[in-house]
Structure formats: C-alpha cells, structure tokens
Image (cartoon, rainbow, N blue to C red; front, side, top):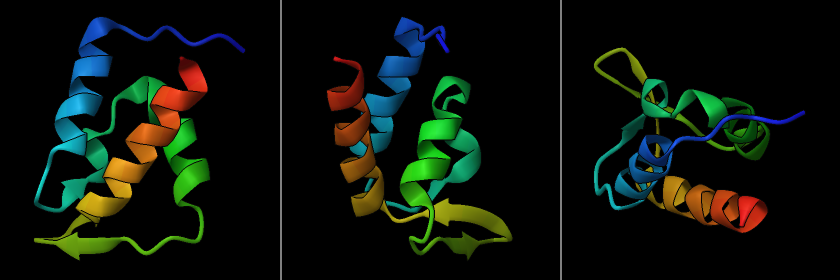
Length: 71
C-alpha cells in the first residue's frame, strides 16, 4: 500500500517532535495515523482538557521511527 506524503506532513512531524507539551493525537498528520496506531499500541496516552494526547518524548521517538522507516 502506497501513501501520499506531502512536504507539509513532513514539516508537521518535525514540529511535533520539537514539542515540549502534550501532543494531541488529532494533530498527527493523516498519512501517518496507521504508523502512529501501531507504534503507540500499548503505550501510555493521557488526556488534557478532554483531549487524548501523547507524551512529547514518545512523539519524538515515534518521529525518528517514521523518518527511518520512510527514508
């Protein structure tokens, strides 16, 4: 299965990896949702203001994983 990844998606991932705050799951670019779900299966997520979020250090690790997978 081939996915269409735009430059904007890559820039969004880079911005997410620099976050020092919780990252809302809804901010994950659509082409990477499946990779996110697979990587975060069994990991701890949290809620902030009733929004499902991931920890910033987990997002940073995931972005590295994604860049390695698609490079």
